[in-house]
Length: 147
Image (cartoon, rainbow, N blue to C red; front, side):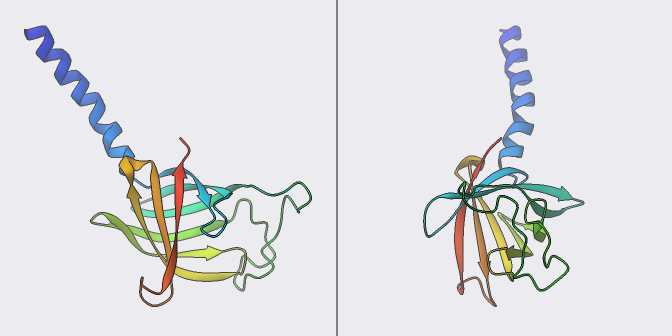
């Protein structure tokens, strides 16, 4: 009986950090275009002192498209910079069950929107919302965890 109890406690101790990690937005995510349903990019979200940021690691492009495009529509320091390696999510902080207070860049049009993230389905999906003014005036994408 004592062995069973010890084994159960050890299993719970090792499982707790894993469960916590799945509730976090930190990790590698595949973005899915909300209009086409097709994957567009791999984005790595990291925690920088309690603030999340996301960087594009890979683009899913057709063979006849430029495989290393630049953000020609951007109006800030990212103008004409390669999209792969670009930080597109910044300033997101945990606020209850969501990450809020940040911004997201849409490299297709160069526009920067306010952003919030919500981890869903036990950490397997991430709802990413970009909006102007209030969250109701925006659009969402669902990203899929890759690791």
